[in-house]
Length: 323
Length: 271
Image (cartoon, rainbow over all chains, first blue to last red; front, side, top):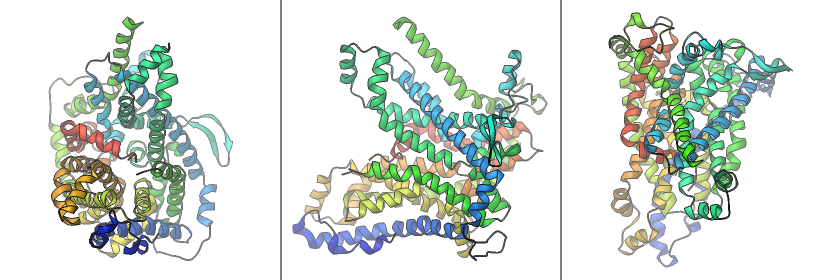
């Protein structure tokens, strides 16, 4: 991207053609205002991504930088690696459950709070929102104790004779051999999903509440007059109207979950047999603890690509048709 | 049906509230327990007396890092809000050919996994002598804060009518004058929204903090993670530490939650 080049003054579209000259000077100032940010983004985002891509194709897997070309060696290594295969599996299940639960809880609570029946609505709202003000590190530290198999929730479950092993469980549910790993639901990931849902439900709730407020009462009334039950009203009218919000929430949660690092690092770490490992943790450890820079860069590029698959269409879509 | 509905709604809301408040309960109760009452079996029991020893210990361990975070978050928030206001002003009121495309390219920076820029970033910070310094972290947060602050201010300024700008122009006001005398005075709530958002994010951030700084330069979240990672530290001290680390953002949320939520809604790219 070389944005600066296209900013020729003659290409400006003046707001009033009559005052072209004066606006021109101001337009230059406008570009000047913007230029530090343009340069920063060009270098720190696009330039550095390019650099990481370059590192990922090199042999730099020791402390000493070595930029000799390795071709796709690092990528091939990763896709054959037990840990990375486990990471991909964990990320898949984490993402699906995390997004699903955040949407169900956010939409469910949103609909409940939107009923005019509820008093103390703002109190409930604040209770559901506040975890978003916390750091994933704090969340991880606390939930690590709540879901610790020898205390926390399990104290309540004792009378029922259920003692889940939570994030220490190495079971892969419904697993079958696939590549080097057992593919299936890693039970331990559920514990991390619970903590993540606890933290991010407020986001979905805030979005849905804003959406629900935006639906005019006339629409609800019209549907009721047409004989819709409350249940049908939500299923057939309201939830379809909220679809753009659902899409936004899904995209936001997907990009959080695909790059998640701090929550898992603070709460469980990679776990036995890497049952709670994710690419973010692997990248950090292999690069900054193991000095495998090229491998780390390859993981980072794969992470970027998975996020880009969601984000680029979303940005294109939501930025189209803007004023 | 309707008679049943209200209690049912309350029941669900209360059960969910318990789920959401459970960690707060654990943090509070554990952190004020005397050490001999901290046990795996007694996690949920209330303390017999209130004991602040764990806070003293946690504070002793975390205070320097807490200060690091303050030195980081204050300038970083102010600078990135200012930069966001400048960008938002241009991108809403002084659009030029290609400015929208430029903005989209900027926005992409908000979503990238920062792992994908981390290796060159650290190399770069080493080269300019800012590795393992607070100013280095400030620079990083200001730069990667550009997309979100620009987006929020752009959407915020879009609600200021163009006619106001037009009539100021007719009165002879230029680019800078309009910004200083019209836009900035109207930007207070924009600055509050962006300020809270950046404050919260930077305070809570972990990946940059743990990779760019070491030991005595580390911000609070890294220190908290180290505290909970070490075997010798008591659990009640961890909880006190977690609460201390969470206090500033919680405090801001309690005071200005409305603006916090507005920032959150602004971040989802609608505009």
